[in-house]
Length: 293
Length: 303
Image (cartoon, rainbow over all chains, first blue to last red; front, side, top):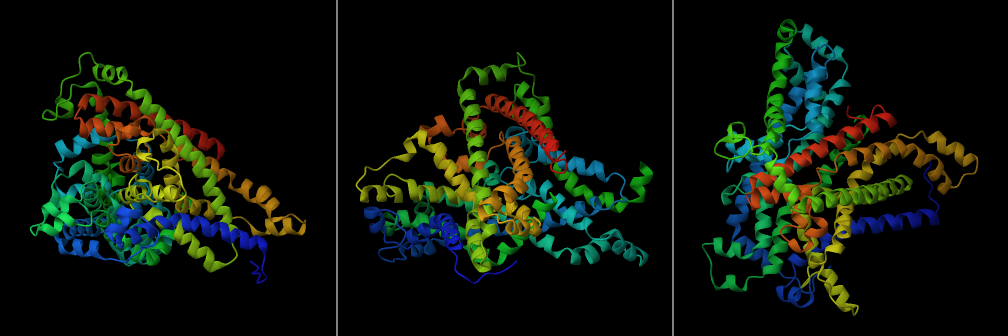
């Protein structure tokens, strides 16, 4: 493509519109950040604003003093995200690899089996009953991991990537006497790092942001994932004060509004922080899915 | 058959964990929708509970309350609104991105528009509260500053379809425009070059090359969207609307209704009937939309 260095009104106008759209997308984040650092009095008198009038970290201080609640949420969510992502990637690769092999006779049947789950659903009610009554997932940490471990979209994304690896590569490994597992791990995996990165990112993001599973299946506070904890804090800030052993008179004057915002910042912090590094893989995965799917 | 299974024993075994998980979390619930016809009791389970008497008892219940009309109407209308507004804006943004010449500007602005996709609906709920809350919301503040009266959005049902549509676009535009952008990047550049030589303006190039090239993608994504109408985004409605019954009249959807019957009221019969109704409608819509998608673009349909 030719890169023109001359100024053009068309490009300037285009950039202006796109800048406005980008701002529209980012402004809510800035409001949260600003409100979390605003003096409680300023919020009460002049509402949430784009920029803090007086910078004040009281909300963060308050939260850090009562860190145990949030730390526990972090612990649950991190554990779920790490275990879930590794297990889910492994299981997805294990079904995607055989599906990519033309020599496997029943692969179409298995594909259809996976595909059907993407199309039809029995709905929330029987799903809930099966999880609670038959699988005993109620208040069980596995409830936050198992139900979303396999996803048809990810299976097909990986399969189409594996299919693009010439089968002669596997054959050469076969002659060397390597088993199917070895082929997957030592030949396919190193050749497929981009798809593992993208799918891994989709999965990890799903686990980190999930609260639906917690909402349906977890009542115990100790097992609540971070997102659900945030919801609890937003709907009832006093929960933090009550749950704290340090409950003091300071709790009565806690900066309620800015605490909610600070808690939100702490929840999305890791994502915002990692976003610039991860975004690339995400877009790549999406492009892959868009072209092949 | 056994011979084939035996020959590729390891390969078939590898698929087993995923197949089992899908069996348990997808196929069992599909079979479980029969609870709609049962006098369900959690302690006896799905298959051992006795049949409802009469068999359609739960449905009698569901269809006599006027709720089903409201949630069906809201689910369909809201999703059609999202599809219409969403598609238009997603395509527009993809075209804008495609026309940007500065590489770094494109990269940065694309990153910023994708950012909302990375956060959970719970957090989006906080954002909405920040902007819309009556007491301290930014919008209230601005209205007062400009000399208007504050508006209590959370008690205005008519405003909510539009509020949710805006939030929906806000969260998904970066993600969806990438899908269109992927198609745009596949367009042969010589098409544009020959158009330029013929003296076509940028605008005419977009009308006569870009949009026709996007047409199949637009049609397919729209049809697939229609297929998913019944399974509207539960998280979005739950975190934005929540228990605020003042705005149920316009934004209560089937999903949230089923959830409330199940977890809130604990009304298993009602929940099961509504759930069955939703699954059947969803089945029909998915089936029809995929058939239509295949008519337009045989590769794009899922079956």
